[in-house]
Image (cartoon, rainbow, N blue to C red; front, side):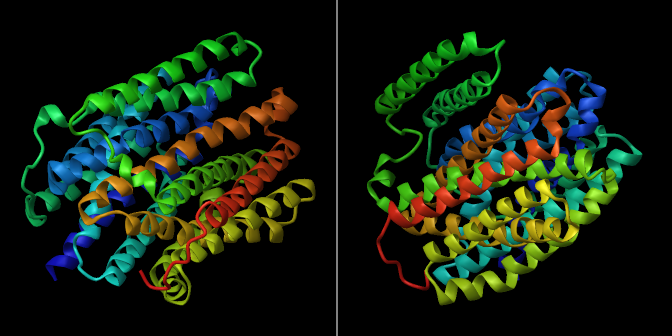
Length: 457
C-alpha cells in the first residue's frame, strides 16, 4: 500500500506541471489582448518555460540521485509553487516571463526526482514500465484537466487564476510528500552540485532559441550572429567547467551507447513536433474556427482523457508485444498523421478531420511515445544514473519543445505577416512542419540505433 501512495505522490508532480502547460496554452490569446506587445513574442510564454525546464533538468536529475529524491522533489515543488504565486501578481509580460522561467526550474527539479522515485520503487523492470505508464497517464489527466479548468477559469476569473490554482494543488502535495516519502541519504556535498553547469546549459538553449526567433525577424537579424557567438562561447565554458568539476552535471559515459543518443535525438524532434502542434491547434480553433475558450477546452478534453486510458491499459499491452523502440515509433506515426490531418483541415475545414487529428495527437501519440522513450532511456542507464538519464531525456524533449515552437513560428512569419499570421494557411504550413518533424524523429529512432531490443524491458 505504501508503494502505491508513493507512486501517487510522484505522479502528482507531472499532474500539476501539465495542468499549467495546457491552461497557459489556452490563455495565450487572452494575454495577447491584454498586453499588445505579446502579439509578437507570445511564443516565448511557453518557450522560456520549457527551456529553463530543459536547461536545469540535468541538474535536477543529478541532485535527485545525490542529495536525495525526496529532498529535491519537495524543493522543486516548492519553487514551482512560489513562482506560480508570483505569476498571479504579474502586471507585465517581462515579469510573467521571469515567473515562467522560475516555474521551469521548479519543474526541472521535481519531475526527474519523481521519475527516479518510480524507477527505484520496484525491482522488476516490468513494474517500472508500468509505473512510468501510470506517470504518463497522470500527465494526460493533468493536461486534460488544465484544458477544461483553464478554459473555465480564464473565461470567468481571468488568466491570473491559472497560476493561483497551482497554489491550491501543490500545497497538499508537498505536505503528503513530507509525511509519506522516506528521506534519502545525502551523498553529495553542496559545493559539488554544479549549479553553474545548469545555468550555462540553460543560457545555451535560450540563445539558440533566440537565434531561431531572430532569423525570421528583420528587426532582430542584426542580433543573430552575436547571439550565436554567445551560444558557442557559453557551450565552450560549459564543457570547460564540466571537465574541471569532480562531479560534472552528467556522466559522459551515457553517450557511449547508441540507445542513449538515439532516444535523446528522438526526444528533441518529438518535443518540437508535439508542442508546436499544441500551439497551432489552440490558435487555430479559437482564431480560425472561432470556437470560444470553453468550447476549445471541451473539444480537447475527451481526447486527453483517452490519452490517460491509453497510457494505463493499452500501452502496457504494446510494450509486452513489441520492443520499446517499436512502441515509440507507433506513437510517432500517430503524431505524423495528426499533423497531416490538421494541414488538410486548414485547407478545407471539416470537423471530422479536426477530431481525427486531435485524436491521433492528444489521444494517442504522446500517451504511447513519451512514456516509452523515457523508459527506453532509463533502460540503458545504470540504476544509480536513472535520475540523470531521465533528466537528460527530458532535457532533450524540452529543448525540442522550446526550439520547435521558435522554428515553426519563425517559418510561418517568413510567409505570413499581420492578420494573416493566424490564418488557416499559416496554420496549415505549421502543421506540415510538425508532421515533417515527427517523421524525422521516426527515422532517427530507427536508423541511429539499429540494435534489436527485447520485447519486455
